Length: 301
Image 1 (cartoon, rainbow, N blue to C red):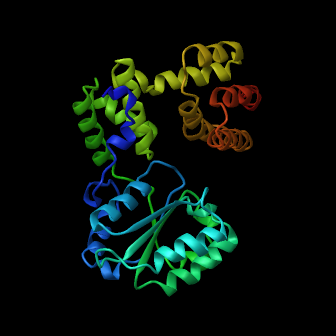
Image 2: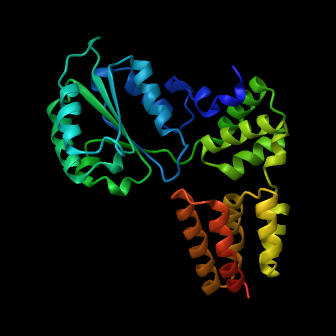
């Protein structure tokens, strides 16, 4: 099979809890020692790719339990909860281990579906436990949260991530340097998924990891073009050289905005935040960032 056609994010997704990079791994392993007392889990983080889904799948795999997997964005209606979930939750286990309902993107359940699910969680607790994942815990109401053990997947260990990425590079013959791996982790942290995707890009293009990860000198050069009002030059670079505008946007947010006077700082932070929001909506990132450059130029006057 041509490895260029394989998603490494799936190929190298950990299948056992002990191999998931998370500050909660040891705690969850302790829970798994007594499956009959396993709580419901709510895994959340503001950023995708931090291991929430991997941990959920690993728990199910380690237990070898019956599982119903739903994506709340597609299976969000109250009818699904009343039929599919209820029927599964009260069904008989095939191996005497409590069954599991795994709800990905749990915040997208409708209010009625969430209300119906609250009672169901308690009614069939002896036979079924639940795992929810979400990127926005604020959209899951407090009565629902109170029925879960809530764990934030926000700060995976960087050294563990580096070792994980090196292993992938070695397995796939990806060119790298230790400095390149460290730089990759720093710039894409905490999204492990984005790091792995970048490694696969390096394999496809047959280049060293460090060649796809800008150093701060390069980002500083791009910022200087904004300060010097070189809109056309920066626009050309973004289009012709494939500048990672998401990385540039983060650099401006974390490194340049704090150096400005308060009023300008607030305005620049708002622009970066708006760009980030629009990136996550699936809009073309180059168009979004380029359209914000004139406003950034005005802020730096």
